[in-house]
Length: 118
Image 1 (cartoon, rainbow, N blue to C red):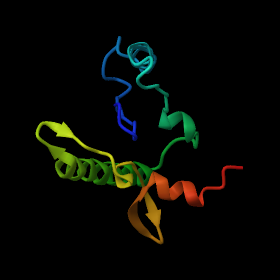
Image 2: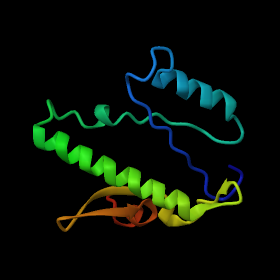
Image 3: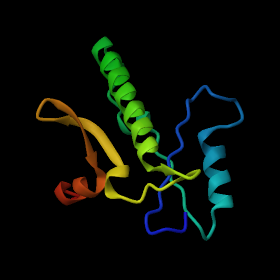
């Protein structure tokens, strides 16, 4: 965590454990990471309040989830060396989505250049 690029990701299912809630994990990492790293909560369901998902939405979400996990597995194999993970290039933090009708992984550093923050 003491390199130039500092990022991590914790994925959790809302039904994983009654005591290990999102808030609990956030408080745990925030407390333990003081001075080394900070934490944020991002619950995707809360960001995308679009009503009940259709069967297409569920199917497409499953397909994107599989592609994302496969990408993460491949990326971890590429950056793993001598018992450590060296994820210190720009293409190790990506967002999956559609680009011209093709599922693509876009590095966050590239998205920042084309994002309208206002």
